[in-house]
Length: 454
Image 1 (cartoon, rainbow, N blue to C red):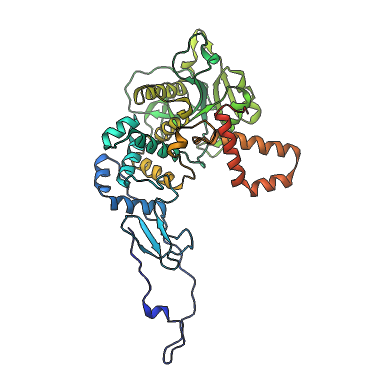
Image 2 (tube, rainbow, N blue to C red):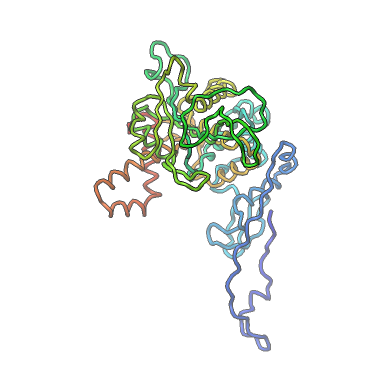
């Protein structure tokens, strides 16, 4: 725990009184600025993790710094002075108001009977382990008695893996949809009724390969302005010759009710920026590459540079022209079939998509990924409980975080009042946005449950 601050000495409590022979108190001064947050140590390897979080107290100290990086402030009275209270690590009490605060209060760990060491192991495995971990394996590895406890714990962590303020994708984006689920007789492709429809977007990052000796191969892509075509030769800033390559950047994955323009276009708007600044500081429109599905035809009118590609071209499949998004979809399907044995129910699929997206976007930064997972866990507004989790998709059941659907619903509401010119209503909506977003989440639950259609 951070530095101990006890009650003020008795003499200081009466220093404001005019005692004979005592000098008057000094004039009040402005309070000093809050101290800057200290850089957090991050576990980059399993050995680092074992060294840093071997005890319950070590976990409590670390979580305390994650929750209050600039120093403790009582949630009720704002007092920054505190002292440890109770026998449980992580419980403190402020000096002025005698208010007790637990480091897990209001987080996804609120009310949990499991030790912090167990929560930290779960967060580390979910955030850093490339194939993730199933609830059954987690139960066996950590010695948890009941499978339901491990299942609920992992879902609570998944509920905190979505950052509502995440940055939109930009640059060159590939977008496509896919169906997740087993074989369905008689209704192939978009005629499926029992599978879940998922839309995927991935950033394309171009880089100059100056070291690889692998065989050069031409990749069929659409040029974005003066960007080099993968497979062509180039020279970097140091003058080294190389071959331009293309790799996946950040991704987005969302369960959607259908593949109509009313669903896909708002989804792209909520996940992809219309413009971006290139390396020269020039503002350019984002290029969105899709297949020939007609629902994407309105992207050009929204300000994007839309590049549709037909399903076949000279007898070749779309996979050669949209390689990155199909690679992500393939990895997702193998992960669901491998780690989770294809046992993910459609009503819980969005939670697993959130986990896959979080880990993929931070695949190069294992230590920061664990710290980010804890940071989102202590700020998550909602968390699933045992009874609501098993009734997901039903009346009163848990709704897995899906900010993209929230953005679609909220955008439709705002656009309707913008079109009507009702500025008073828009101002009222802006002032009452938190309460209205609760209604949006309830609407999202009905959308995900199929009760209503956007």
